Length: 350
Image 1 (cartoon, helix red, strand yellow):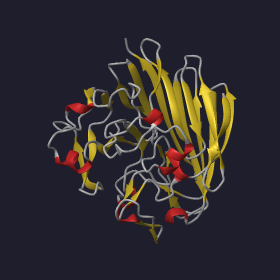
Image 2 (cartoon, rainbow, N blue to C red):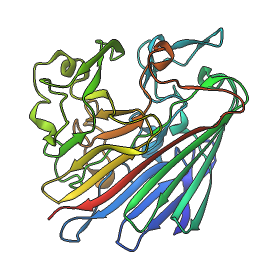
Image 3 (cartoon, one colour):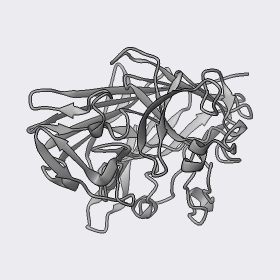
Image 4 (cartoon, rainbow, N blue to C red):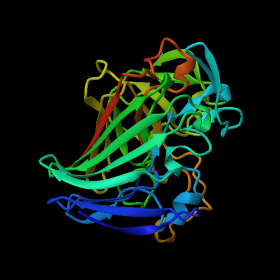
């Protein structure tokens, strides 16, 4: 493990880059601006390494971007309708950054702040601990919330994402990691990738992409990933749900017990043999196929990132949960600890 300066924010705050490498040749680079994974190099079936996440060549790209490349999302991942919620008898108004809705923590979410950070090594691998104190009223949220996120790379070709948080006032919280994966190293889009999602129900959305009250069975729909399916097979279909999102940008209810660490999804690229298994304690998975990526934005090495250049597998609670008492709770009270864990397991198929 090593670290080096990665530039400064416009406010003059220094940013640090950490590089972690395991004995199989997986290398992860991460900066403490947004806990952003800037590079993830993984060998293919022939041992050839390539970077499998989208991003930029410098800090300026991440600061300017509105697409959350590689960052931690909070306080609340996904959407909250009308940018408001009632909690513990009080109404809170949040920053509105998606028309009149709230998305991914607001105008300046956790992806746009510099976290305290330190590298560490233990028997479980090598990692970086990030910590951030989100103050009462930040982006409209109640409570001073202390968040700790650990990224750990071990020698079993796993990256462990470990989250915890505490608060001094009743609040809501829903954290996720927003890396855009492309297992072929960006040589093509992700429509030829094959995906399995361990779920038989997904959340329907309205035209503004807020969940409706309907939890729909995936059988007979383009949202059936119970068995591995090429992502591009149905993405261009006439289903109104695909039209609303311009592709996949939906949440699936995972087939698992509450708080159980279980398989959520398997992503496979036939051209390189790379496999990503995602395990999580979270109840849901948001698949986002990069439908709104701006093809005028140049990423690493001048590469243009248009729609479907990468995809996100966001392990999280459900969007608009503060308005949906039937969804798993996102409340956090003083004296409690928010805990969540996600594991990315890499392998290859011959």
